[in-house]
Amino acid sequence: MTEDEFDAFYATAFPRLTGQLCAFTGDHGEAQDVVQEAFVRAWDRRQHFLANSAPEAWIRTVAMRLAVSRWRRARRWLELVRRTPPPDSTPGPGPERTALVAALRELPQAQRMAIVLHYLCDLSVEQVASETGAPVGTVKARLSRGRAELAKRLAGDEADGPVRKESHRVR
Image 1: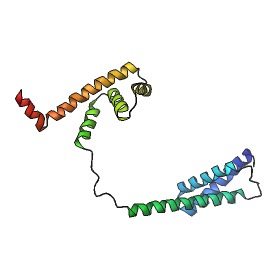
Image 2 (image 1 turned 90 degrees about the horizontal axis):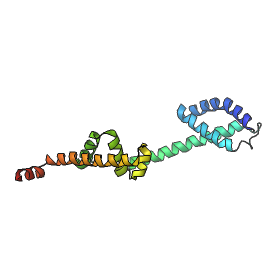
Image 3 (image 1 turned 60 degrees about the horizontal axis):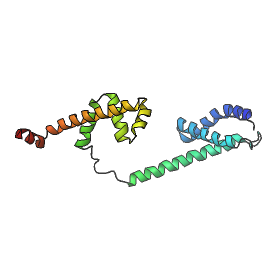
Image 4 (image 1 turned 120 degrees about the vertical axis):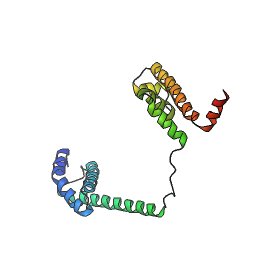
């Protein structure tokens, strides 16, 4: 089957096969996915398809097998999920992380992006510069200013705690 013949075959057979697989799966989107995947597999074999060898039947069979495989995979996953009990409780972020995120939110966007890319994503200064489109010197300045601002904000949070209040009284 030539490319043009395959294109014509696809144009006529896809809607029909999708309708058939929709009746089989009960889900139009799923039917489109499996029929499309079957056509992709058929594309690789299009030279071996003959007009009289029922290529539509081959595609329908492949699509139905794909649908059944997806059902089996989904059923195995559901059985696994049912067998695995959920954790009793999922702890939320600790106070340090909450304070850090709150302090990061207060930074200007450019400083916040530089800090996150460099310290949390482990990018080098040069990679951060490339990612943001800023010169290396600008990234270094943003990192420096961002660190200073974070230190000030986080130290301010600690000052509200009982340990820092004690040290203020000594002065």
